[in-house]
Image 1: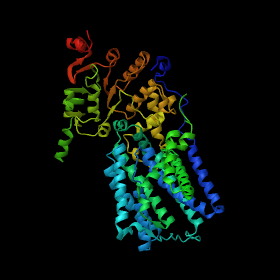
Image 2: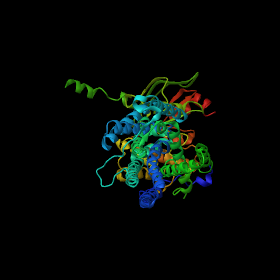
Image 3: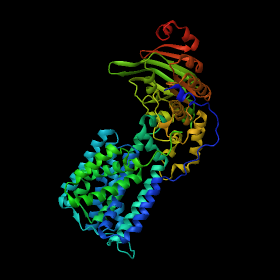
Image 4: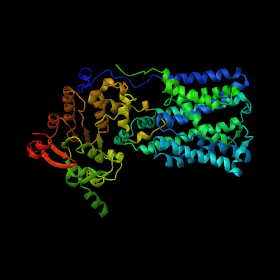
Length: 335
Length: 260
């Protein structure tokens, strides 16, 4: 420390007027998110079938990426098993909708309950660990779910997967079987999830998550039960991943082991890293980018994972805070 | 009925000590970093913990705050045994601490740092259905705390852009925000210029007189200015304990610590 720079920094305690007002300025990333939502909604009716399908897929996967961001970007917990909750929910919907003809409400509740309960059990096992160990445990737990999907043939039809999941009937004049109404359904659901997670990360609980990301020892000294905070974040994150899984089962009409495999978890992790961990809009952007890139690139080559790896290395080297992080200048700071 | 009367009468804090350590030890493998330490601090007392580098002062703070478990001995806070209690439970009983190496939340703003500290001891910390901006009372308390340490005009700045001196002020602000009854200050003037150290000493002297303060301080002039009582640690053991005059006059202390 140099005396000249900080000699006057320790100020005598005086009551000062003109305090900064509580942050009322709307986050630019939130504005960008709203613009993107409105833009997608306005553009959808004139889009050809294939881009519309991709856009629907992107809206659903964006929910999955944002749910992981609550854990990775806000709490600092890198999970490699996030496809588990997504997949369990998707399988629940597929099984209930095809074998028992249960409607949207029943499937939604059952899928969210089962997947969130799984996250609640897995969380007990995983939260004690940190860093690489957390990564390994979540990876192992994810593999358990993948193994079940693959081997429990009587329930999951194994490698064949479950086909023919019917789109839900909502009693609306538009059938969700058509691409455009289902796109609006998915977009609305994604907007709802974004809003709910947006409130969560801005709530007192959400600030606690950021505190844990920055310093666990200080959080403990302040009086936080750090374990409980992390555990709740883990379960909530699983809940929103499950919500994405429900949408996915209806969107795709097919659920198979590929939905719960490691590659799905890794891709989700890369979406968050690409878009910018710690910003929900950023991870949604990452999800949209990866979904479109994957589908366009795979037209030309089978080596999609190679391209994805290259993109990831590029992001780590040139924009470690993600694409949105690289473009957003520090809004506050040095005087 | 009778049972309740007995219950009311019995939990009188042991001899009015805010903090009491009985033969507390901490061993790291073969090294006894804290060795059979006894310490009794009365409510409202100001006490300095001094000793050469490696004497076990910070380890002792980590045992008191619950960051590390004690190998043996008992620690009581206002008569309650907290030896096995987690750090956050001790904080809930009114214990707060600062860190020798600044331990704040660098990528959050000063105000957010303070809000984290303000909400820490309230059930609001688990609320997830409303944005934090709606909790006007939390903001008011955070601002009051920042004003008390002279950081109010830096509320919107990101902590990593603060000067070292300002970060030390924030370190204290975080500890004060929960209105603690026992405050552990680990070298509050570490890295500060002499002028800044004087301001920090003034800040500590102005703290609520009812607050019990235990401070680790290398600068003897500062330490003796803030406290009445001094405990001297050497190789993990208490070698002197008493008023500042007693300790200053103690020949053993002069030999080991003051190098006279």
